[in-house]
Image 1 (cartoon, rainbow, N blue to C red):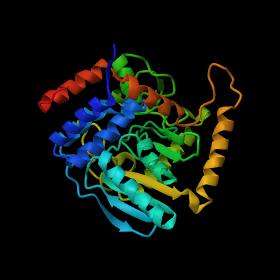
Image 2 (cartoon, rainbow, N blue to C red; image 1 turned 45 degrees about the horizontal axis):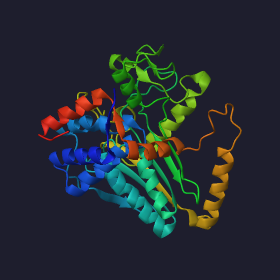
Image 3 (cartoon, rainbow, N blue to C red; image 1 turned 135 degrees about the vertical axis):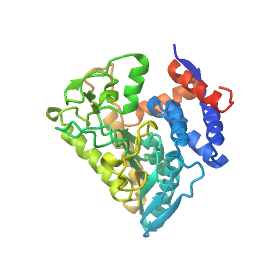
Length: 358
C-alpha cells in the first residue's frame, strides 16, 4: 500500500539532502521545489523517485553542487547558458529567467543550455512565464534510450516539450509531454508495481515489440510517440530530433547517442561531442503580438469551447492540456502525495546515507 506524505515534508527532506551534498541554501530550496512539484502534479516518475539517482550522479562526480552558472554568449533576444555541471533543477530556472528577462526587454527570449543535467519536469519551467503574461516553452534532451523509427539502436532521449499559455478567467493551457509513447520513468513505475507495459512502449534488442518493462536492461529501446510506423512513430521521431537539436546542437551540449546517461553505473560516452545535457527555453510576451487582456479573453473562449466539445462517452469529458495535473495538484496539496513502498524504501536509504530522518 502507498504511503502518504505532505508536499512540505517531501520538499523539506529533499532540501536537506541537497544541502548535504554541498548545495547552497538557495539552490537546495529551488531544487527541492522543482523536484517535488513533479510529485504534486502527479508526474511521479520525475519527482522524489529520482532523488537517489541525482545522489548517485553526485557520488560519481557528474554533478557539481556549487556551479558557476553563466551566460557565455548572447544577443538582445538570445543566449547560451553554461550550467557548469550543476543540477538541472537549478540550471533550468536560471536559464528560464534569462529568457523571461529578454522577453521583457525585446518581446521574446530564447535560451539554449549546455553542461547541465536532468532538469525535472519541463512544465515547471515553462509555467514560470505565466506570471509575466508570457507564453513559456521548455524542452531538454536526455539519456539515449529511444530507437528512431525502423532502428534497433538507441539514439535519442525521451526529449520532452512543454508549452504554457496564459488565459484570463480559465486556468492556463499547459502541454507537457515526452516525445516517446511513454517516458522511462513510467517503465520504472511498472517495474516497482510488477506490471507489464502496454504494447507500443518498448521494443526488444532485435527490434520486436515487447511488453516487458525491464526491456531496456536487456538492450531494448523505448519507442517514439506513435509506437510504430503505421501509428505515426516517424512523427514522434521528428519531434524528439527537433528537441535534441534545439537543446544540444544549438548550445554545444552532447546530442543523440552522446548524451550522458542519467544512471551513474553506465559510463559516459568516450568521445563526447559537447558538454553535459542540453535544454532549450523560450518566453514570448503576449503583448508583443496583441493586447494581453484581449488575448487572454480569447484564450478563455478557446478553452471553454474545447472543454465543452461533445465527448464520445459522457463519463470522460474532453480535457484541456494541464487539467489533469492541475486537478492532481489541488488534491495532493490537501490529501498528501502517495509514494510507492519501493520509493519510500529508496528514500529511507538516502536518509541513512546522510544521517537524516525520513
